[in-house]
Image 1 (cartoon, rainbow, N blue to C red):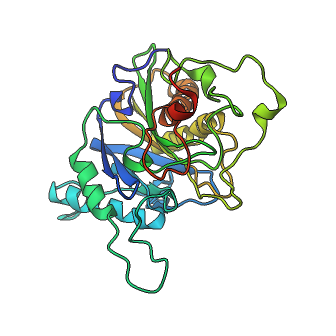
Image 2: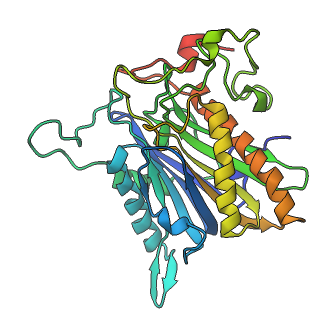
Length: 342
């Protein structure tokens, strides 16, 4: 396996990504834009999801294609980011046609980053009127920034993300298969659990690493019993969580096949984070297919596609933590602060 040219989800033809970050608030928005409406579905396996329009993505529902997907910080406040994206797309004439009307289809998912040391004046902690949340404007800004290249680490939806003991972030990766099909993934990693093995610098996703994209450290030389101890962000209460992801391919898929791809991709999430899918995580994977390449044997090829999508997502999750950058009042250090250069 080899990564695509940029090792980003935008190696999948037909996709662009944009980030918008509120540095003071330690929060942000990431938009995955389909240049043409793309087949999409979703699988939610966490116990505390926050979503918009995910029911629409079930295989039996009428609308098959989306214009964009939105990942956002801000807990439920962040769902407004999709409104900003939707309005901006409407201004471009994008959307599902209903007679003369067009309705942009913009499903979204959020993570909880309200207690990460950022200035969240829009959260009312006592009687009074909080300020307007920034997410609608951030959604518009992220859409306007969509491009083939984009930053990783402490940006966009991953700007204020955390994991157990380390800062989280936004990660992405891609894989080019021998048949020419490309698979990409992007993840905003804000997990209850940990991306690293015990107290070591080694990532749970190590078996899937290509080159040294997250340090090239491999497995730890010895697995002591403490390596698999369950470490979480409880202190003593959870610092809330959720890892939200998109996997994408340029293969031609049906909506039902996209659903299966989303389900299978959760294997990558579980291989990169320990524990995963907890009652306090809203772990979610969107799946997109831009439909540029036909599969020779769709049913059998979907097996390989699903496995590689899971591996690619595991790599994206590790890269999110590996590339995080420090900021004032962070509750946890970054990987680099704690372990130094690999």
